[in-house]
Image 1 (cartoon, rainbow, N blue to C red):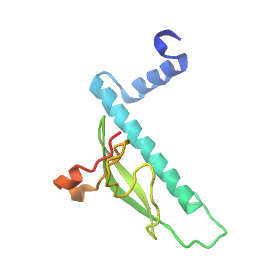
Image 2: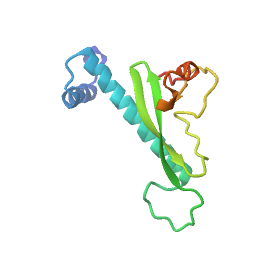
Image 3: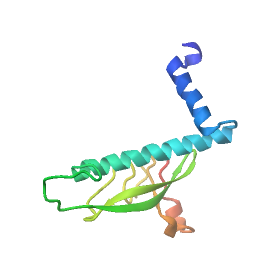
Image 4: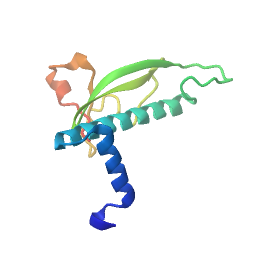
Amino acid sequence: MKNGISKEKKEIIASLIEEYGIKTTNDIQNALKDLLGGTIQEMLEAELDEHMGYEKSEATAEVKTNYRNGHKPKTLKSTVGEIGIEVPQDRNSEFEPKIVPKHKRDRGKDHQYVREGPEHEGDKRADRRHLRI
């Protein structure tokens, strides 16, 4: 392992360079933003699957008392820039995501603040509530 990068990591990096057409540091930042947003999105979907007790479109024998109810847009502010995600919702509003908490008010060690949707554009208080990654 030369320069602290394993052969496997070099292969992943080469794959990312090819996939995203990376040529500049700005390209790297855009690729990281896309990967981070995609990872968070997948984690949110998995959280909702766990909360609901079944995967999306999965037939269940049990009578459902709660259903999936679309997505809500959120903008996360990260060290690589703003990232738009779609937070899945449930009809009963019981889903409380852990990766992107609802209405996080205190500034914890993880700096988890969220600005919810485009309706908060220009809202100075909302601008202070971002997810810092």
